[in-house]
Image (tube, rainbow, N blue to C red; front, side):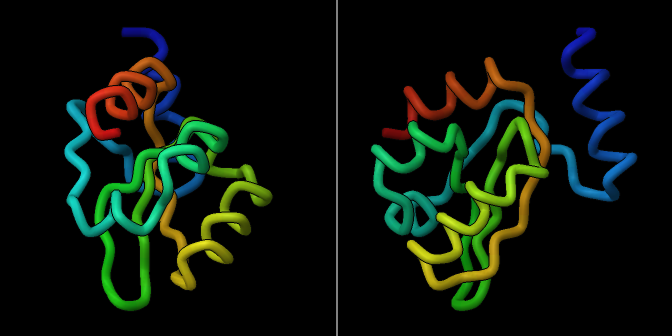
Length: 95
């Protein structure tokens, strides 16, 4: 689809990973980000380690959202580019 092509191009330009659908969040990542915060920032937590949190987001340049997540989780956020409808669907299914 065209939105997916745009998202893939953005990911390539920014040298960030593209989060392919379907998004499959790990339970450990979901537990780190409260539902209200995920919905407000429109991000899907995907994977987590002791130091990092990978999230799918439509706007990986949203420094405010990344800062909020880093503050909330105490982890370095690693953005992945995704298409907004895919993010919305994953949020409904995950939370």
